[in-house]
Amino acid sequence: FKIPIGRGAQWVESSNEAVNIRLVKASAGSEYEEEGEDILEFNPLFTYPIFGENEQIFGYKNLSINLEYASGSLASCFSMSYDDKKPTADKIYATMKDWLPKDIGDNHDIFLETVQRDAKEFRPMGNKVGEYRLNRDGLEDNVYEFYHATFQTPRFKEYHRRIQLFAIFFIEGASFIEEDDEKWEALLLFEKESAGGQVSYNIIGYATMYPYYCYPDQTRMRISQFLIMPPYQQQGHGSKMYQELYQSFLRRKEIREMNVEDPNEEFSDLRDKNDMRYLDSQNVFKDLKTPITKDTIDNVAKKYKLTARQVARCFELALMKKLD
Ligand code: ACO
Image (cartoon, rainbow, N blue to C red):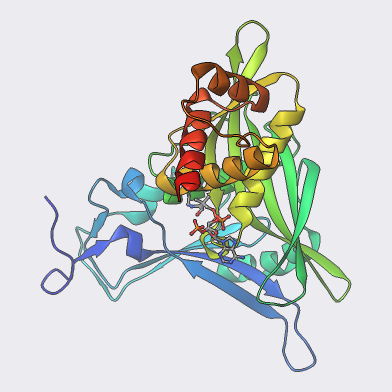
């Protein structure tokens, strides 16, 4: 049963509210300002894998659990504060330990030094496979870069150990993936910032995918985890990352089909919109006539490496649009 959080229940905290995630960026400083940090702060959507189904923590008043990350390298720092604690309070670090990056620190001064250093030195790992520009808030165009990596890519295993908790926090039903399985692939999306002759990188999002065998000699690529960091959502990055993945799958001869593991509503929306746009650009919906045969659907699915189910969905949407 769930104890109501609020008045009269001061010793119970919502674990989703207690955990504060911070992406900490070095700010270059200026004539008027010293070198410092910019912080993007947000809370997790899901903490039930860590704190249990009810997402509650017992025994504290005004608990804050701070998980701070350098915005590019994701070097991290753990700290906690509270106004009061009962002797029988839940043990927070012990509960979280197996989920946190193995190299998380607890010294804030060292962490801030790392933030400043990594802003200068950290570089993405893997092969750069694409880039785009987006104009944010009418300011100068920012540059965004895609990197492809596997667990054999130097530094990626360590990086993945730092980023994987974000999938647990923001994708319902996500679990850690098996890093000893060499078939996993990942696409990383970074923002590249240039200021005062210095280049630094901020992580924007990532996706993991797994190739399944498809008779007789091809693969079905399954997108497993797909995440844009909360402060960067609703700005078009998710669509860009989806397009990058899909276009790379279209180019690779061994891939026969792209599918998605347990898509949620937001992802399905993104997928529908982008698939519709692409199929439309290929004139698939020209001369749309009902009934649409299974053959048509199968042929389009084969040609564009989509599932028959997804193609049928796109045809349905195209028909609805036509009725409008
Ligand atoms: N300014 C304002 N809004 C914009 C802009 C812009 N410049 N560009 C796009 N948008 C709008 C889009 O039109 C769209 O809105 P609509 O759906 O109302 O039309 C909306 O923003 C979302 O599009 P994107 O910005 O491209 O998507 P986003 O970057 O937010 O990514 C995603 C979507 C992946 C679902 C992201 O929100 C996320 O990571 N969520 C948490 C994790 C998650 O749910 N992942 C998917 C789980 S399923 C799986 O992993 C297989």
